[in-house]
Image (cartoon, rainbow, N blue to C red; front, side, top):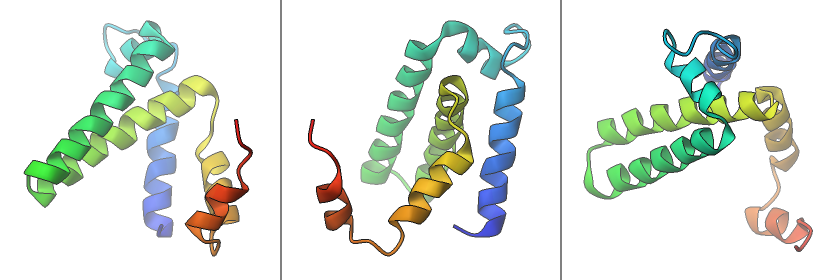
Length: 110
């Protein structure tokens, strides 16, 4: 992730977090917050599925567009849950240079 793209995601998160408690009649983000975690999580799932469908049946531009929607809704979920982008960046940094297979094997079993 480049510094510019990381900055863009941090800026998006800040905008989303600022909408928490705003008037739901004037902000889609505030409307999502007002509907609560189940609706926010549902939207993340919907956008994830739409991204997959675009990857299988659409153009790269459509994949990019759906990915932007997914990232936005993920930021809403993070703000709802009190997860800050830096929390995620830190986890990604810890995993950098570790095989995905090894990293997954190191996770506690449920």
